[in-house]
Image 1: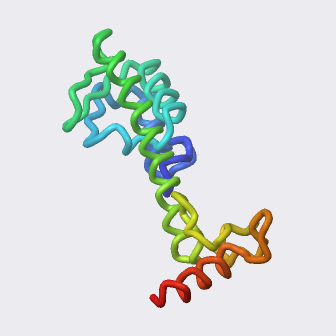
Image 2: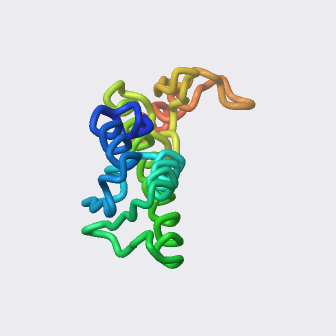
Length: 148
């Protein structure tokens, strides 16, 4: 089940909310904040809802505790970091997907090439200004002259 869904839409999350409403939970001990959700909004909404039922939240790996102001402040920062990690992960997946497809990933375009609308390198056929040669033709001509 994806962490981008609100907890009430996840089977165990729904059960947790039900138990919190029933007053059966005082403290929720989590391993890491991003286990509650992948976006700051999902995390903070869930924490807010739990706090309405008197449930405090502590992390085993992160230094926050929602029972005090500094802990709630740190919670907001860590929720934003979880959001950033999700964005970076998606960006990385997009770059990997483009690389597997053979697309140009950036940096300086090699001499004699251009990047087409789909993002692939292709030989640049345009003639150089004031010349009868393209970049590729000119390069090959120069190599022949130098006997390289």
